[in-house]
Length: 88
Image (tube, rainbow, N blue to C red; front, side):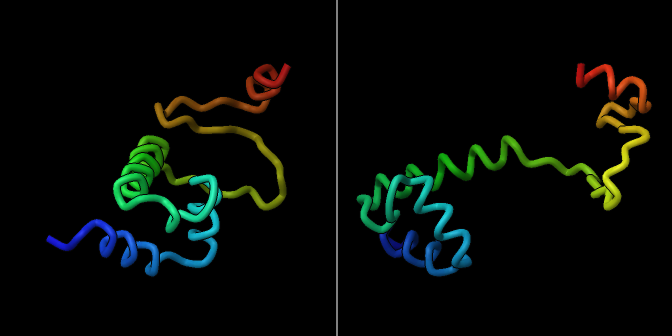
């Protein structure tokens, strides 16, 4: 197995510039300034949180900004009147 610092460096080098900026910002500064153990713990925490909030839904953007109905993951459909009620 490769040392933690090499794994982290390889991971970090493979990120897009935007992902690096977001990761560094979330870490409170450059991830590369953390100890290998601290950086690995942080990356694992981010990965765990991302996994918890990832969905496999087929979300589609409504380009006109009109909403006539919303179908929930449960399969239940909320019509326009019900949606307005939620916003009151």
